[in-house]
Length: 247
Ligand code: F6R
Figure 1 (tube, rainbow, N blue to C red):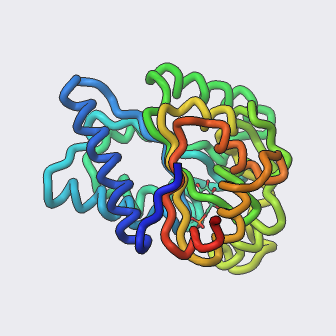
Figure 2 (figure 1 turned 90 degrees about the vertical axis):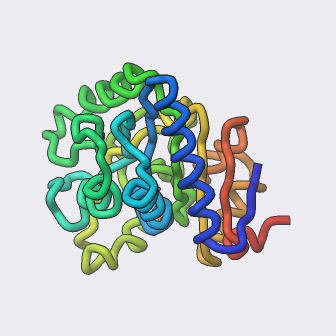
């Protein structure tokens, strides 16, 4: 289904409260909440609201386990552009999560070690009982995670090559496209599909053309987000601008 909110703020509050409710439901049952998280501009207000709920309303993250979708490769975790830094700045440094429960793909591995690492990442998700919810943004290439055009629907966590448009969109963060890594480690489409709930968020006019393709276009590896049409557990959460081309 597609749900359209007036603006990104209202949509973000909705998603944050959905996550908070999941965490509280799990707490009642003494279980972990296993969250699949995304970086980028889109989820920033979601994380801000979760931090507010922690600081002002006592929401605890002690029972929360997180797996991030992706990380650039190569990438040092303490670099300004790393997704580790992003997550620390926007969420992890401000809540009471156990640092051992945080998982972000490791951008420092030797090439030879990546395949085994990716399999272990998948296994860790499974061992925690699978993702309760996966949060997604969408790139202008139609990528989810860093599953660029050409990605297979059953793909797992792996090393991928970033699309040129994705690197151009990241150029500002890196002070020029030539500084943007050419590769990344990402959960696969198959990994994302195993989540019990999937929430794809998109705001702004800039995302309207790709949202039209993702929601209404033919299902094809040319636009990996179209695969989400095949899942019953997906919700597209949009603002009016991102939804403006939908019929
Ligand atoms: C980030 C990720 C990407 C972004 C997408 C949109 O972890 O996996 O798929 O969600 O590139 O980025 P923003 O939100 O910056 O427009």
